[in-house]
Length: 249
Image (cartoon, rainbow, N blue to C red; front, side, top):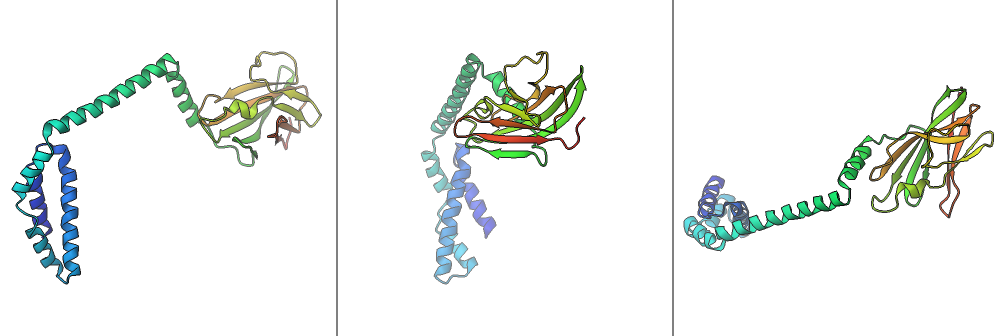
């Protein structure tokens, strides 16, 4: 019986010249047929008999198809499809032109690349939750270079709203303190070629992203620190993260 209904339905839709509408028409006809079968079953008809009677009252498939073809005029259907496609193309073109004029095409590419390059914070990393972001910090390698100690550590920032505050808000005006009391400030505009000791420098970053940012930073000292704290002591959203080295160089 199912095969008979499918054959009936095919004869109906075959009369409709605008073929993109055929699937939806078949779906509606099937729903109408199944509802009729269920109604008959509730009246006490066996399944097979209910299907036969439901199909019998559906009508001549060719005549029904021709009537539906008049309602689904091909030229109206294709005009709507063309208009919708043209609108989508125009919107996409306008978006590309806008982004190119605003210098954001490459920016979007960099942001996607860095978003995907973001690595999960190290196990055991110190963590803090703020109003706009979640931050982690973990120690890195301690090396010696040109007679100075370079204590590296990693800082991760995950912003809660990609269209809200930038990560600069989450890590602006940072202070650093170590176990010997040295205090410095994190300056994102700092020149990595600064001489001397007691300063920060960035050695790797994914600082152009959508919501996830990662920095590998280091503090240049003349001794090996046991721990380093990064502090954001401003406003009512202050926080502190600590990185500890169990073994120092």
